Image (tube, rainbow, N blue to C red; front, top):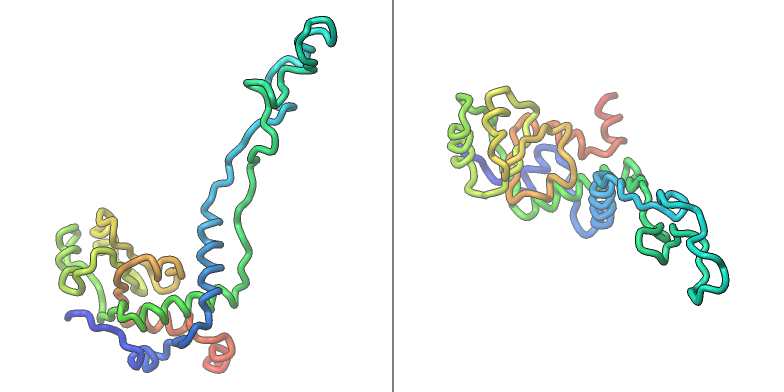
Length: 212
């Protein structure tokens, strides 16, 4: 069965909490910046004059040589000396409130749905463990080059068949994040994954009411 475009009306019918208007744009910005900052290793390191492995002896006497005064060879003004205000190992990660992350996820998904970039399908299962079988199945659903496929889970054949297809990514509905929702030309979602995404986009108050 071929995939269908998830319209705004169909999304609301599936109980997805769609954001309309400009609300949530800043949340998306904050979350994306935080996610990318967290991936930075922060391992850049330079040595100060105290850490450079050079002699601490005075290069020449203070007076009488005609040269400028020099106290040590590790001085930052000398070649091979220490570095002034150079980078040191640090943590670039940023804290983002859970409510902001939830809002950013809803906003990103809403924008992709409004743009007509989200497709739905009953399920996505490759019949045999072959990259060609995966590409054939994907080609029947969309002709986009970069595709994000979201399901509640993937079997071993589907997962392994997709490993060598770099422009395509498989993600579960419980793990997909805001950056992934914005990084692909098309998003293919199975029906079971749609139910899980509806739970993730639902406000906490609505979740508590549903459980009661």
